[in-house]
Image (cartoon, rainbow, N blue to C red; front, side, top):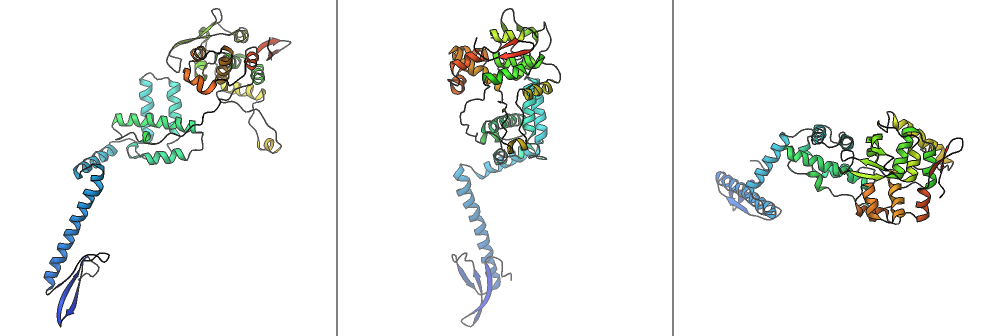
Length: 381
């Protein structure tokens, strides 16, 4: 007899006769019976085991599945479908490549596709060797919560993941959009970083050729970085006074005409060409040099120890500066939104009353003044 098996069967004496005891108690609850023969005792013990198994299944069916409105059959079908999805799924890294190819085929801009892919590729090491159908919401949340980035950046990565999982569901690689189940981070509204008129003047003075055109158009027309990089000089019509942003070159896929303000015309006229891309090869290297010459340099450990403070580069500051100063100068959110390709609600949420009228006047009076060499004048005319 196996004394460890449940229910336990033991042999004892009862009124001078040998009997077999079946102890079917669990945690002090249950029954304990005596039998004259071993075979009858074992039959009762087996009946107890069967009853316990059936009761256990019944409790699971009634209490667990029923609580969610499911039956055993529904649970089995769900499990089988989930297993099939996993088996027919693709690696996370492959899903990223196929998503990019799909977006390019649907005429999304290469710039947008490249940035999305680069952000998603940062997760490849975390999900290396895993199929996208086997990655669940807690896995995604764990990764996002471990990032040391600003809430807005976290939300951007989450947005890309939602796009990726939506594509995976459509392709039959995942059952549900697991990324959608992860909450967005709360973003505290804050003023966007902008250049002071003096900083803008210094940067323009330190720039030349295509770098000067890039900074001037960003400062005084408010184009997005990607929009400037796609511009051809044929899009800059100094005679009519407008920069033409085609639907293909616009982030919002809508055509718009941006007025060329007087000070922007003064900066562009000496360097304008009849045609050709405004931004030339190796632009980043030349722009970094201009930034450094204007005082926007990364701090070193020694400089921090000595308390030397260098100018911090305002991220996306060219466009933020234009919108902030232009909104104050025009006092017209609709006009500023139209010129910058922004939503009007964004004007009120982020830019309203950010700068004072006198600062805006000084900003739009930054002009090149030739005194032996090109300098910038930040004082009002």
